[in-house]
Image: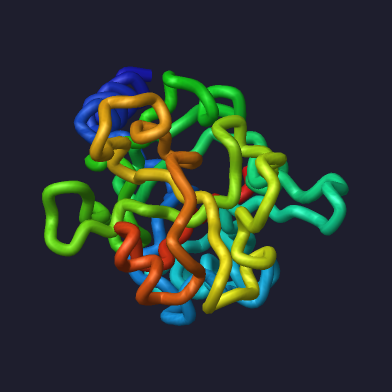
Length: 215
């Protein structure tokens, strides 16, 4: 009896000294674009690219979704990014929670900042003040994470164009030239000057994506 109590005490002491297990990464910003501007071969290609980078980084999660919306001709309903990424919560490569659920993610309560919007390698994305600035992240979405109804091309041809066109981007560091709400938006700051790699770079990006593992 005494031995059992002693054993339990030792186990308890050892357990108290162990660090909490870090949450597996379920959110990241791609460390590099595909190199073809906003052309990812549509949603399927973008999802595959997220999975490719996650696997190379050692992720054990099998399914990844790019945070991208699409539109359909004639103003028909498209696909909304918020409906592709699961329910949450989501954690970055350091195990820090960036949002607990979809509503939290699309509110001022989310924890997406320059310090937390990390790549799959656990590195920060270069933002305003860095050289080069790459804080523009492709989304094609409005602030609520839904497909845009603004009209015109907001998704670079549903992520198939690398020339003319435009796409809505967010700012991973939530900063911009003006102190306005949209310049602080992680997912819906402004449109790009084009869909090619050079155009994205000149706007302040590199063709990067947000990637989420549906939970």
